[in-house]
Structure formats: C-alpha cells, structure tokens
Image (cartoon, rainbow, N blue to C red; front, top):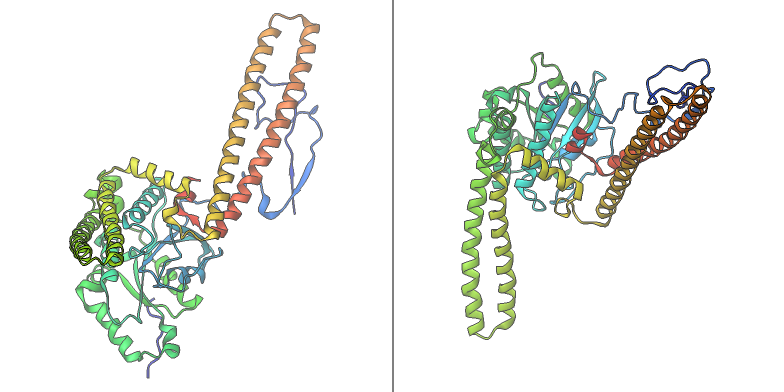
Length: 463
C-alpha cells in the first residue's frame, strides 16, 4: 500500500545626558558638550532593549505574512504551532480555540522573520461570521495601508472527512470570495491528518480517492487549481509545514492583491457590496427565515401543550422559542453591520478589541483573567502617556517664561536665571526619564501578555 508523502512543492547603553548650558527647549538629539554631566551606564537584558533598536515583536512591511484558513478542527493552530516561536493554544474538540484573527511570529526556512495569521472558523458557533469577517477585513486593509502584503493564503482541509459538508462548503466559498481568482497563485490547498491513518484506520486508498475528488470537482478545489492554486499534503510534522511555506517563498512575482482588499480599499465599497459580504448576508437571510419557521412551529406546539395542560412541556417550548427569537434578531443586527464603510469598520473592530468583547472569547477563567490584565495595562499606559505629555507642556511653558524674563535682566540676574533653568531642565529630565522607564516596563509586560494570549493582527498593525 502506498504511504502518503508531501507534494509540490548583557548590553550597555548611556542614560539621558544633561548639558550645563541650557537650550531653549531640551533637545533629545543634541550632542553632549564638555561640561555635560558624566554619562552613567545601565545594564539591560536582551528582552529589555530601548525602543530605538529593532523590535522583533513589531511588524515590518517587508515581513512575509501567511493567512491560515479552514473549518474548525482542520488543524490551523496545530500547523502554526509547528513553525511559530510563540505559544499557540491548540484545540482538540469541536469548539474553536481561536477567537480572533491572531498573528504569530516565525522564522522562514531562509531565516527571514515572518508572520502566520490564525483565523477563527466561519463555522464557529462561538462568534458571528460578520464579526470574524469585519476583523479580518480591517486587519488586511490596515496591512496594505502600511505597505505590507499577504504572501500566501493557506487553506486546510481534513482528509479524514468522508465528505465536504455544509460548513466546509460555506467556509471554502468565503475563502474563494475573499481571495479572488487573480490571487490564486498564492493559494495553497493543504489536506491534513495524513499522519493519523495508522492510528484511526481509514484506508489510504479511500483517502487518495477523496483527494482526487477534491482536486477534480468544480464546487471543491478544481476551479481554484485551474486559476493557479497548488495542493499539498501535510504529514503533521515541521518539515511538511515548512514545505508549504517554502513553495510560497519560492515565487518570484510580487503577490497579487486579494479581491476583498481591492473591493474595500480601491473601490471603496461597503462590506455589504463585496462578494464575501453578499454571500454572508444571503446566508444570514436563509438562517433568519429558518428561525422564523421554527418560531411559528414552536408557538403552535406550545399552545397545544397549554391546551393539554402540560405546563412543563410548554415552559420548555417557550425557552426554545425565545432562543430562536434571539437568533433571528441577531441575524437582523448582523445585516445592518454589513452596510458600513471601512472607517466605521475600523472603529468597530478597535472598540471591540479594546473592550476585550466577551462575545469573542470562550469565557473561561484564564481568558477573563487575561482580558482584565490587558485592560489594566492599557489604562496604566494611557495614564503614563498623559503624564508625560503634561510634564513636557509644563516644561516648555516654564522655559518660555524664564527666557522672556531674561531679556529684561542684567548680567548677574541672567547668571541666576541660567542656573534656575538648568535646575528646571534637570528636574524635567529626571521626571521624563522615570516616566519613560515605567512606560517601557509596561510595554514589555504587555508583550509578554500578548505572547500568552495570542496577539491580534489588528493590534500588531496598529502598534
């Protein structure tokens, strides 16, 4: 029997320096003179470097970025965990562990820093498809606005699935519409779980037939392949995952722009006017009509239960009816969310990320704790930044006042004023140095927190 194979391809830095002769406003870039205070040196750890040095957590427009998509359980987080330097939470059930569009750093086989973007499944019951689409689109458009590009769109599908179900077809269709035919050369269609056959026992010949069906059926992968997409088998190891990435890095042409980016950025469409937005809106309309039918059916059954004096059944039916009413109302709200422009989409995603919206987390204790810690850090950082701005404004006002007074003074008085100015500069620099040090510590703590919870791509691009 054939065996599955992968296809296709401590450091010293000077502290703040002070000058004897005061400038009108202390200059952070001015060179020290002979009368400057002696430099002091402080030791810093490798992960506590000043922000002027390259930041490995920061996004660079030249960094390759690869988006990973697929249904819940297809192996997106597992694929990323094989390559990434960050900790990635991997789910083993039917509920997705990925609740936001998150970015993870990794090193390409050629040594370059790059990013892998994990996306929630559009079949995830824990979050509305509209919210996922909004965050994805805002993150992508921000990426292109900053000069970056998507280097690859990687779609994962379990080869162990005997058929392509409704959720899988829906997710694949959204993937097609987001990407567009012209961007298919940067698409990699990857079948996963080939490494599980010996354990769970499905016949390999059956898996090969399923793979052929995926490749040759138009409603599955055939159209994508004709437009330039390439298929791979992922064997569950690092080398196999690297082969997928290497095939994208080997491309010589610049990556084409995704369809959704052209629609939103170039053509200035609202989300409802995009192909993916219309598809989700139509799907929501079908669901809403289904919920309406269920509500009517439950109302009749509840009325009959009341006539039969079966109050326990009537209460159960009433609870089920309320749930369908809630779902129906959610569909109506979702449709209104689609008819917005990019600027409002940006605001919605920013506000949702800032709140740590409970709808986009699983609600377990660790998620709640991380969200609370993140909100506290954000509040402390905002407070420090405001203090720094106030200190600088106060210093500039006092400097201007003293320099204006000096114009009217004699030589002896000016000597005293210069001494007062120097003391004021020293106080300002001491306060500024302390505040900036505290800000740096908070930013470092925030980076550590992000590595624990997975970093939102939107947050990275906004940073």
